Length: 98
Image 1 (cartoon, rainbow, N blue to C red):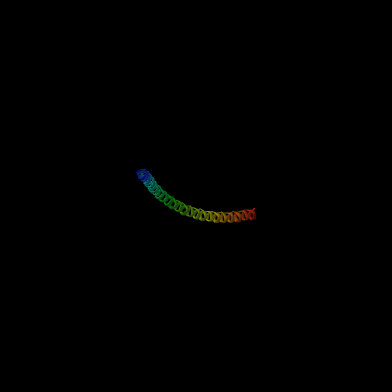
Image 2 (cartoon, rainbow, N blue to C red):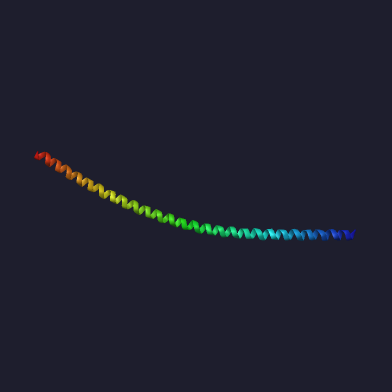
């Protein structure tokens, strides 16, 4: 009976060793997978940072173009006002002369 108990304990110990090895392998696999995910995450963060930089540059460029457009619009509006005034004066002069 003691031999049987000893054999059972050895069998259980072997089974536990097998389970321990399987768990260690799973842990190693999970750690490798985690490292790969962290590497992917780092690459994605770099890409995101690059795209944020591009977006900031595009916004700046858009603001500059919008500012130029508004300045040009003001110049043209002023020019139209001047030409309209001149036309009105010429029309009044032509009406006066006729």
